Amino acid sequence: METRVGGERAKELSDRLPFDGAIHTQTIGFSGGLWVLWNSNRVEVSSLSNTKQEIHIMVKVRFSNATWVLSAVYASPRIAERQVLWNNLMKVADLHSLPWVIAGDFNEPLLDDDKFGGRAGIDLVAGGKVKKSKRTAPKSNDIYLKLLVKLYRFLVRRTGSNFNAVILKRLFMSKVNKPPLSLSKLIRYMEGKDGKIAVVVGTVTDDIRVYEVPALKVTALRFTETARARIEKAGGECLTFDQLALRAPLGQNTILLRGPKKGREAVKHFGPAPGVPHSHTKPYVRAKGRKFERARGKRNSKGFRV
Image 1 (cartoon, rainbow, N blue to C red):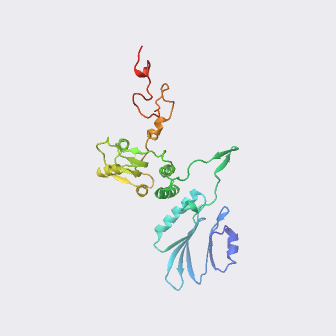
Image 2 (spheres, rainbow, N blue to C red):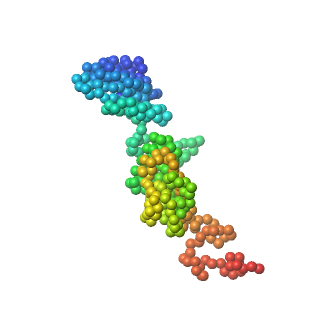
Image 3 (cartoon, rainbow, N blue to C red):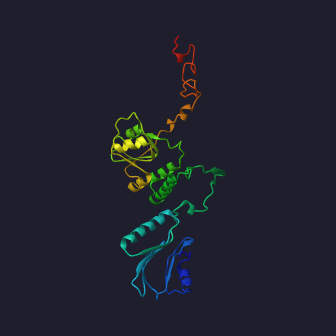
């Protein structure tokens, strides 16, 4: 158990308890201080190794042949030190084939709901208030999207991969910031990149102007029905993000792509007022016929020359 007491004080306190065997570790600041206590008339304990974050012992139950390994853990709040603990546990796993119990505090929430408190949404910086407006979760209620967020949060924490961090950030984005990518652009971007996996945090759409589709490996949140059919017919693969996490947990052999944000019809109406010089903004009109929003008279737009 974690007692937050170490050194001579730990020995002094454990000697008062009804146990004749004890192993202690040093505290980590004001936390940690692992103790393992036992009675020798019930179990035979062999110490394997211990650090500030862990104690590994082999336990043999008296009056039976049951033998197992116990690892008592208190993971450091600091990420770098906690990584040392994960590496040590992997080494211990390779050294034995006995039943193994790991117990303690890992300081690693598996779910968002496991964490309470923390810093407030507004910080005081240089005497002013700075609102944290960056998204930390998607606004969509799509269950699959929320599961992907949990998966890539886990990968970001455990791997430290910048690729996974970018994927996680893009999963939070709104639909406007996750524009679709057409099959024609996908083929153009992947030219000369054989064996790579194209990754699109958005939708892959078909393009009827494309006649030949090469064999592509594509990961996307969604494929249109015809785009999926054409990719698979050409001998390619349409992968989901959970499949990508198994194939490339660090983003190896992948090409991260995104669609054009200014490709939407609505964006064509943004900008300087339609009709002013050098404006390419599309006007809101009912039609493009002879009588609608057309310049008349002796003006350059009608081909008039002096």
